Image (cartoon, rainbow, N blue to C red):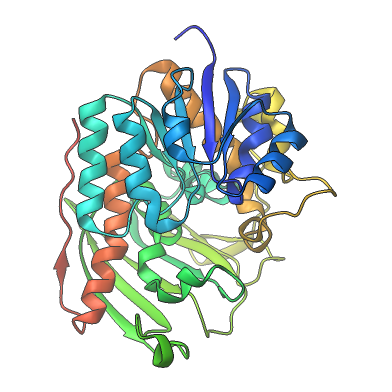
Length: 368
C-alpha cells in the first residue's frame, strides 16, 4: 500500500482520544467518524476538522474509501461490529474486550481469516511504559527464566454506563491478563477461579454476585502459572492495572500507589525505578501523545483516560502498530488469535467461579 491508510473511528467517547494521533501519523489519514448522537458527532468533528460523518456504523462500512475501522462502541457490540467490518473488507482495530462469549471470539477469528484483513485488539496494557520496560528486561535476558506472573485490575465503576452493573469482573480482565501472557509468550491453557465477597446492587438486579474474582491459570505448553484478580464495584482501592513478573535473576513488581515507582529486585535487593517514556520508538509527529491526552480545555477527557493515568502512554503506540501492520502486510500485535485467548481467559475464569472453582480448559483459536 503506497497511499496512507484511510481510517474511520466508530464511537467518540474514549475513541476521540485517538483522533489527533491518526491525524498526525505520517502513514494514516482520518477521514470519518461515527457517533449515534448527531449533536455530539458534529461537535467533535467540527472541533477536529473531520469531513466524513456518520450516525450508523452501517453507513460508514458502506464507504469504499475507508480502509480501516477503529471500533470504540459499548462492549456488547464489539463482536457484531468487528465481524461486520471484516466482512465489509475493512481492517479492524477494536477496543477491549474482543467479545463476551467464546462463540463470538471464534466468530471474529474466523471472520478475520476469511477476509484476510487485519484484526487488532487495542489492548493498552501491552504498550504502556511499564510493559515496554519489563519486556526489555525479558528480551535482554536480565530477568532470566520467568518463574511466575501476577496481575490485577481493580476499578470502581460508579458513574459509568449502567451496563457495567451486569458485567462479571472477569469479562473485562484483559488489562490484567494480557501483559502476563505477552511477557510469558504463551497462551492461557486452563483456569480455576473463585469469586469472593458480594456486590451490593446484585441483590436488586441479579447478575454477577461477586465483588472480586481471582483466578489461577496454567499456561499452555509451559511450566508456568499466573494469578489474576479483578474487581468492578464495592472494593476500597485506588484504580490499578498492575502486573508483576518474577524471574530467576530479576523480578519486577508494580507499585502500591500511583505516585510511587515500580520496584525491581535483583536477588533479594530491591530498588524503585523510573520508567522511560519510549516516545523515541514512534514517528516524531505522534510522540507528544505519550505524555498528554488529546483533548483541550474545551472538551472533557474521557473517564477511562483520567482513571487510568493516561494508560501509560500507550495510545500512540497502539495506533502506530495498527497502521504499520496494515502497511507492512503483517499481523498486528495482538492479532485475532491472541486477542481471543486473552479475552477467553476471563470468560472461562468467570465460568469457573460460577462453578465453585472447577478447572476450565480454554479453547484453542488457530491462526490462518
